[in-house]
Image (tube, rainbow, N blue to C red):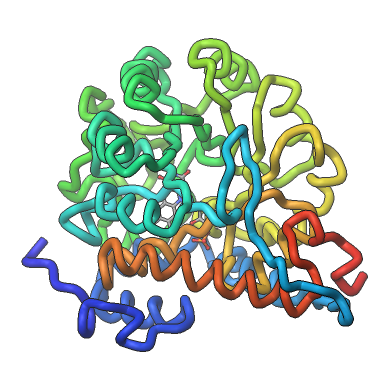
Length: 370
Ligand SMILES: Cc1cc2nc3c(=O)[nH]c(=O)nc-3n(C[C@H](O)[C@H](O)[C@H](O)COP(=O)(O)O)c2cc1C
């Protein structure tokens, strides 16, 4: 990366950035080319990518008036942790592509915004180093896991991540293969473009006899995940294991039965199997199946406080932002990440005040038009 400089004055507040979409426009400009294709792109014809934000916006919020909202608070409790608000940073790979400080820079913004960062196992930073930085900031963090074919390779870095203080593991289960990302293929972009993956540097490259255009398997991803893997991780590490990438109520139930401490409803930001439904459209069924048993987190196309309010009204316990964190990091570094999360939090607070719902517990389905 050439010398990194922040956008504008370096201060997104002074620059008048007041919506996540504005950070997106700035990030598109500075990352233009293969990196932007990789961040912004989805799989196939990008049906799910487009549908994710639209599905949140299809919900209609029906406010109560004449309610005292003066004690408004977004405080909540998740997996034994008190949180100032329920807006988390989703795991996304290789932050060195966006900022030389990589995930440690991201963490600075996440901590300042009182959120939680999940480090991707395809991250640019070793869990040990992130753990050290998180300890200094007293910021909780989670570790995302793509299981490897040989589970001992996964244990090698998870042992270190948990020893370094990861409070939870996020097992991504929706990626036996990458999706058909035409833009990355065209750009010959992905994980073979010289970018370092320090957490997985111990993996030997497995030869694939197929020509590049016929390949579907990736060296970094196991293709044989079962519920037993959830149980095994939960037993081995003794920290909560959240299962990420669930779209069916029956799979959510299966994950809980296998020992999942939480479920993340996600279609991987429309990047894997195209034409999956928007997460906003399947959340309800999953809440009805496992709500109350374990926390439910949702991501995908969440760009406004009203989207977050709708997710919480439907029964989610928290939400994750994926791309908006990258937009913030690429444009203003830690300050941009902090600002992205604070925009979302402030908009959520406004939505709650206007809905007549002063606490997270007040957000229920009665606030949505059926
Ligand atoms: C550039 C990029 C890289 C990602 N890398 C990972 C990853 O390493 N592990 C993972 O579980 N999900 C990954 N995701 C998916 C996100 O965790 C999340 O599910 C998704 O981005 C949410 O949708 P949103 O970007 O519309 O907010 C990635 C998403 C993007 C955009």
